[in-house]
Amino acid sequence: MALPENPFQDKKCIQSNNPVRMAVESKFNNSEDIQKLDQEYDNAMRSKMNDATGKDLKTCVRDGLMKRFPQNNISAMVLTGAKGGLVNMTQISCLLGQQELEGRRVPKMQNGKTLPCYLPYDPNPRSSGYVTDRFISGLRP
Image (cartoon, rainbow, N blue to C red; front, side, top):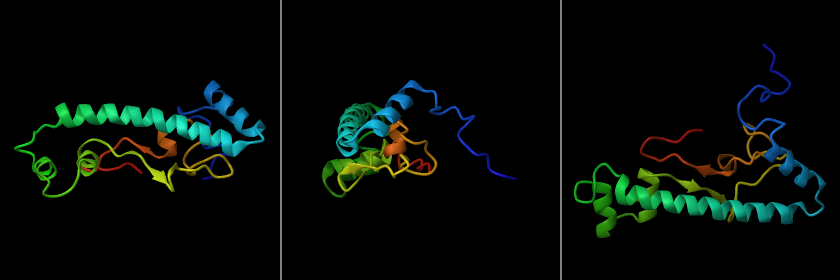
């Protein structure tokens, strides 16, 4: 069985006629200063995703755990100072958040993709390393 020329053609993700994708592609293709534009985009996305992560973590840690402090062993270890930190507890029970490489979001290759499974210049936060999964339930590839 031969692979289709464009494996994303009939997918329900970011299609080639999506206005957001078209705007991003035109900026990246026509800009002389691609690195500056990429850095501005990175900073804007990182700040928005950090705000969203902060809100989610506050809700999850305060109200979202099925077993609260005295009964939850991980919570007991972290809050008493015996072992681990708040970051470890939130990554186990809530979400990982934005993953960074060398202080930046996951960089794009020359073809505009971060990984082969994403479309070029995909604006989806997940394509640039934002992980909404948690360790207790497992991570998606």
